[in-house]
Length: 472
Image 1 (cartoon, rainbow, N blue to C red):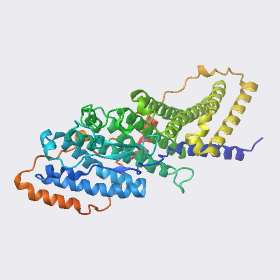
Image 2: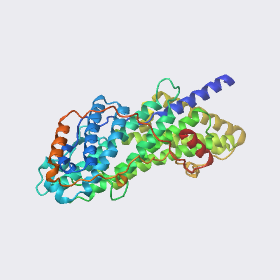
Image 3: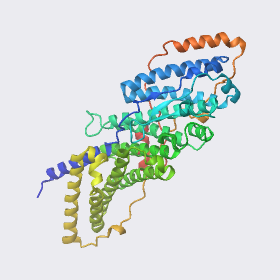
Image 4: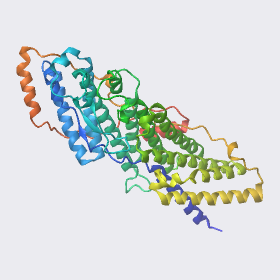
């Protein structure tokens, strides 16, 4: 028979294994830096020349693209998030301005070929590139429509890269060495909530979002709906928002567990909430944009499915512990069996957190086996309670917290700048602006990307306290 010390050591080892599995967040494979060719915004300089605010905005956009280019080359997620976060509101203002500009002005005074080319950050093929405006090869596509399409796609590309960079940075924080057995989950949670907010802003159903600008274009424009990248569809963005929010909730669970502030009852409900978010993420893209869903990164989809099973297993584990504390011995055995069954599928060990932390997954499985055998032995020898069938078990209601945080600027709220045809008196200013575009547009490095404190959510009292502690 094991001593009390040995039992405590085993319990601590199981606790630490669960923490590391919960913190093993999805790791974005790339930030889309293989192909980044934005619109040459000097094509708008004639339209901006009569207005000081427009000239200043174009100059800021040029400088912002220079910072983004450097960040993409370095492939540092914090730098990418900071540079894209600085540029995104400016691009949103420019997209709003182009949308409001008179069609005749854009047709007559737009110079060059306003197109862009980007690698998708969501597609299975990391080298897949999408090009706006049909590369200028589509007859009948007006300059105005090609410009609107390209600017809107630039906004989408920058927003998606900012979100992915935040997710990658959060992954590094959650598993940061020197914070055993877990990383800085509080900061990771804040970044993930902001990433979820960015994805949700793209999925917004308003009429002045970048995707709405694409929807309003004629069908003969360069890029049809089927040819769009997944991040240019509301359904795939809604799924990405749920995935980021699920990761934020995982950080909240880990932080509370590490401080022994999470009772088994609430832990089970929070784990159920993570599993439901992961399942809803798959359904959102599959049901809303099935063709684009088929192009999503397969590894990410498998990871979400595996982690959904993992968190259902963790929910069953905490339900078993709660049943044991209530001396419901038959129910305890049933929940332990359910936990073992949830972790049995091969996908749990070949994808997601189980593949990332195989030793911890094995340790959890062995701990479940030992706990189930002990509970079964006690019940069959002492208590003789009926063990419910799996279909008779009633999981506690899921608690969903750590929802998306709204980004600092939505295109619907962007303050527009005027774009209009230049007059004869503006020719000198236009020449000055053209000269400024030929100079090096690099500016000072963007400020550090810091997440604003999120608003409290109204769940159970303990969940609210956890939320406030993590985001206070």
